[in-house]
Image (cartoon, rainbow, N blue to C red; front, side):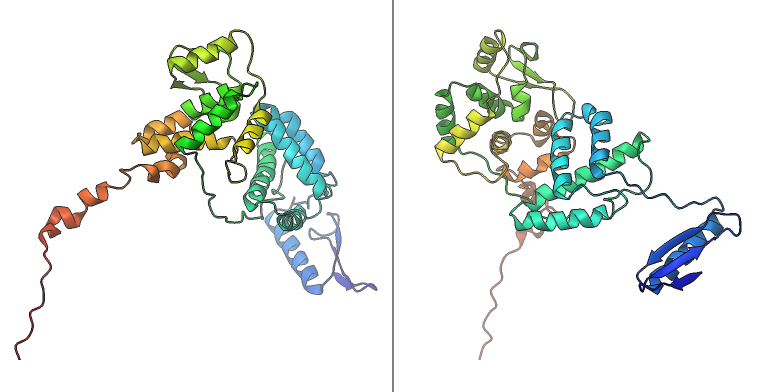
Length: 341
């Protein structure tokens, strides 16, 4: 039964299973919404006589993040950083309750962040992380029902241009880092020599190196990989790691990079060393499959971003196209003869 209330709302008061079964009462702003709810509820009870509407969940989003932080985050290399980033976003949204509209809360938060100059790609990563939190909790039985962020779509963005350093910039940067008292010079040397991530180089231990080879164990994919290194780099690493661990030198690297005047896109400060390795590897006619293994990419699609830098990229088109192999190569331009007057 649907009744119009004094405040203008429409109240649905229904026992879809008949007397003795659960009774539902819910108010709506419009009669059409009330009718739609009534029809949907009746249909669900017909399909499943034991159907019960889920109770409203008054837990806050921060509680779910804390649950994820204790049960899932420890199994992820960047779990701590992800939790901190999502918690900051949650507080910026006002820490909404789960029974509310998390989707609209995030949509409003996204608009405000964009207005403040935050990159759309950054917000896409946050949305994917929120979706992943609920999906992972569902897998271990700590969440049931729909994903509150499931209806939100990723906003398409242009793929950012990947910058890499020229030989002159590499020399300038390394000369400046050599004058620093931190370990930034050695860490940067490892990154430029192997294409590893900054974090992977900084976490190296003595057991990770041997003459001619370095093994990265603490990787993003959690899969170790080994890359050849020069004798000079091995000696430099061995001299330090035989005495102590490499120190946190990200701040020192950032300062020196800024002092050199090298201009980089946002977010590519340390990753530019990885891009520089991959770019010069392909420009020197390196094999794309070898590069995939060295970088530790799970799919070749990621590595193909560097393929266009190879001097031989797509040159087979000129050698193996059907126009050439079938016989069109003997075509000659025929000049149209003038018609005699």
